[in-house]
Every structure is written in C-alpha cells, then in structure tokens.
Amino acid sequence: MPNGGFCKLPGGSVVVAIGLPSPAGDGATVRFLVHAANRARALTRLRNLGLRAVYLRGNSEPPTPDEVTAVLHHPDGLLWRPTPGAAQELWHPVRSLPREPAA
Image (tube, rainbow, N blue to C red):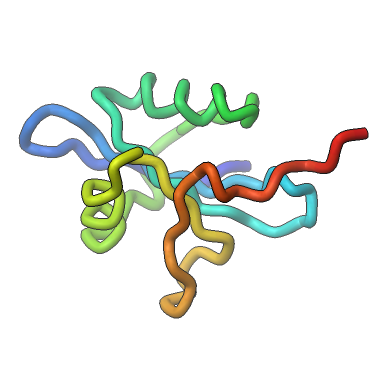
C-alpha cells in the first residue's frame, strides 16, 4: 500500500510525497515528490508516467521541509529517490527513472 502525504503551500499549490514500488520491478521502494496545483493533478502526473495504481489516502508521511525545497527548485517539479530516508542518496529527475523492461 502506498504511503505518503502532502502539504499545502502559501500560494495554494501542493507538494505530494508518496512511496511506491519501483517501476523497474526490482522490489525496491521509490519515493516520489510532485509539485502541482492540487492533489488530484499531482497524482495525475504520476499516473501519466505509467504508475496507474496511485492513490493518496491520508497524510501519514507528508513531505519534509527539505523535500519541499528540493521539488520547488527543480524545473520539472517531479523528483524521485530509490531509498527513502537515505541522506546520502540524491533526488533524481523523473526522466532518469529506470523503466520496466519490455516483454
């Protein structure tokens, strides 16, 4: 089950943080950060990447201030990191996300 949360920014937009299984199918967890006008649009951005079963229920793990800063300073407003909580792991732009091999 995905875990995550959101925070509303003073300008009205939101930052959503959500942990999902890796799209590469390797059993790892990936934490995504999305900046959007509202929660629905943030989840739509993830679904458009092929992550179809993305739902945010509750606010159990909202983005930290460092995560909010990272996503706000990225031009795409969409980042990922393979191991949530690992301080040495940097955030990556979504276009560098490994994809599931074609069958």
